[in-house]
Length: 429
Image (cartoon, rainbow, N blue to C red; front, side, top):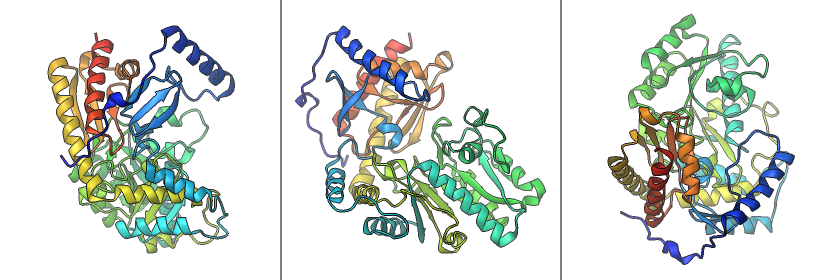
């Protein structure tokens, strides 16, 4: 495997405080959270205070192996030297300018994205939700200008996740995220993921003349770590071409090397009209991007859309550094090597434990679906993993999700898998 060895896990001293001390420290933090924060989250029973690579330390100095990456965000791990250097240099140069002007880091990042992809134009923003909001607005505006106001319907998939704005949760097709907020935006049709017949039927409504776009994740993340089949993605491309609709690929999670290519579409043989990126793009610094062609981009003229912080010099400097590290043969081939090691290790664990009905995914973006006996226990596994010194994610109630740094070391993968097996033994008994 073309993966650089890591320093031994034992080189960093770990303090093991008394349980009472650890509990007391978290109790204070949790009390502050409950007093000060809007209750949108249920935080873990530890508070990270420092990170280095694929390791995180809590308030008491306990070390955790990070198999979550901040939900596929810290693509190069914590405090990667290239990112620190870019941020530090930019912090001494220029922090922010309004979009009444441009800046050099934004131009450099846009050129990197254009040169490496199908795109000819880039819209820079702050997050995945904002990138998808821009993509959906652009698709509707383009259809409005070229075909008329009646062409506005968007086809999406059930259990998709496209962001938390009212527009993007309506596109996502997950009821728990969109109900209770009053009348939602209209004009969405939701089908089952990988259902070609359902996609064809959705286009057949009104003859397909009212469809302006299809928005898809090349692999569903929140929806259960379901890879899109080549046939389904190709059918979406074909139907969009036949009905003068745009194909939007949401690569917020799947992009920036996570699947072993710079963007997942490059492995699928299907090129979208619009692509959205965020999460791993900034490696932990908030930044997003919408990529498209010159023709489609022309539907957004001056003042039609915008963002205060999009294209921020600090964010773009960091994202440019992340891009330069990831978009290399060494890192992308390394992702494939890590995928093989993860799959081998997870299958070995499953042979001993018999807890997963399926282990699936691409690159370092994996889902382990629990057998029927343990359905609904993914959160229990996540909590037990934290107790064992491992950070993992879930993708719904039945799937344990793994999304570590693209450059996590082999030692850390093996140690993390050992901790995962310990957690499985504790949670699923």
